[in-house]
Image 1 (cartoon, rainbow, N blue to C red):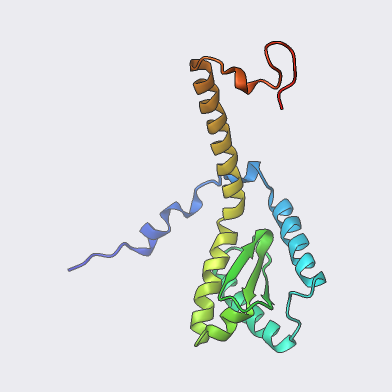
Image 2 (cartoon, one colour; image 1 turned 90 degrees about the vertical axis):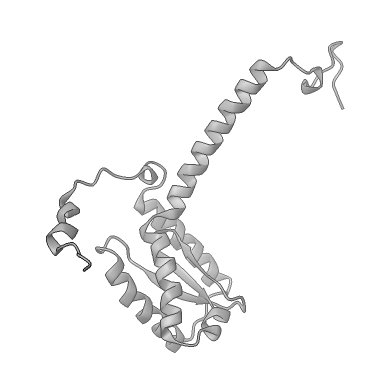
Length: 171
């Protein structure tokens, strides 16, 4: 017989303190919202966002049903359709989620659309963009340290200099 954990065991860690995320040190949630809003407005201004009210309402309804179960109200989601034949979707910082019209046409059911939207919602709730920026900054810092160490251990190559040893500029 398989023994499943009790509800008490499952929720035992729910009262742990929030110690924050390294993503918080890079972009605040307000900054994420501003970035996402700016990109969304750019898409609207260039005519890329579809304005069909029935399509917009359908996508927003499906997305809101999912997002209400995926978070504690920390994010305000905006779902929209981009006029693009590609079978694709994307998440912008701050809760803006775009679905390409090609994806909408290719889905065979609401469940298929919901699966894609759930994936994009998780990018937002897990703050993957801020975490990626944080990771890239760390990677660049490590790369800089590594290159500095390599350069310190190698003899200097005169071709690195902008000026020849006799003072004339290199081409």
